Image (tube, rainbow, N blue to C red):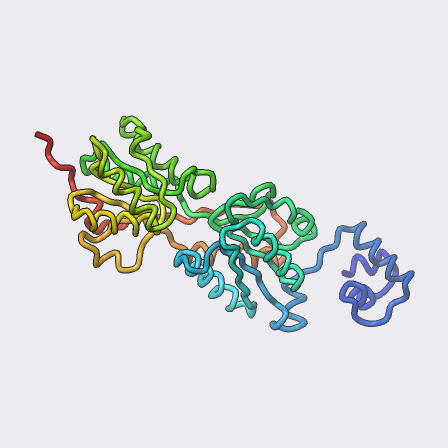
Length: 333
C-alpha cells in the first residue's frame, strides 16, 4: 500500500480509502490509485484486512460433494478446527456431486467476499472460471481431488498407494482371484487412482487383470448387487477389494445376505463400527481430519502472504488389520 501511495503521490490512508471504498476521494485521485494498483500488481493481505475489520468478516468458504458422507463431514471438521484457532469462520455448502451446483455455491461464496475458498470438486467439474480470482490473489485450495483446468493448491489422500497396499495384503494371504467393487467408469481422480492401485498390485504380483472380476458399485445397494454378481460367477473371487466406504458397506451386506464368511474383504476408507462386524473389517484408512487440517494450514499460509507456486500435499493412508482381509482362500480339491 505504501508503494502505491508513493507511486501516486498520496498518503497510504488515501490508498486505503480507495481500495476499501471507505470515505470521500476525488474521482481523478481514485483513478490514479487504481492505475498504480494495476501497474504494481498490488494484492491486499486478506488475512490482515479481515483481522483489522473484525472476525465476523473473516470467513472461509468450503464446498463439499455430500453432507451425508462421513468422510466429507470429518474433512470439514478438520478445516473448522484449524481455522477457528485463527479467528476465522467456516461456511459450508454441498454441491450434491453436481458441477452446476458447485459453481453456483462458489459464486455465492465469492459474493459474500470470503477470504479464501476450499473446494472438493464434484464429478465433471471445470474450474477455469476461477482463474481471475486465482490471479487476483484469492487463496483457493482443492481437497481430495485436484482442480480441473486450473493450477491451484490441493491436498489429497494417497489413493493409489493405499489401494495397492490393500490388494497386496490380500495377495499376501494367498488370494489370486480378487474382485473389485467401486465407482466405474473411473473418471474422477479418486476413483481412477484407487482402481489403478488395484491393477498395480495385481501386476506386481504377476496376476492377470480379469475384467469379469470388476463391478460398478457407487452406493450401498449397487455395491451389494455387484458383490452378489461376483459371487455368482462360475469362477468367483475368493477376495474382494472395495473402492469406497459405501461400496464396503454394500459388500458387507451382500456377504451377510449370502451367508458367506469365507470371502476375504478389504475396503478403502474406514467405517463406523467396522470392529464389531463378523469378521471385523480390514480397511485402508484415510485421515480426513488431517486432509482438512492440511488444506486449512495451506490456505492460512496463503493469507499470510505466501506467493510460492501451487503445490500438492499428499496425506498418507494406513492399513488397519482387523480380520476380514486375513481370511485365506479355500483349499481347492
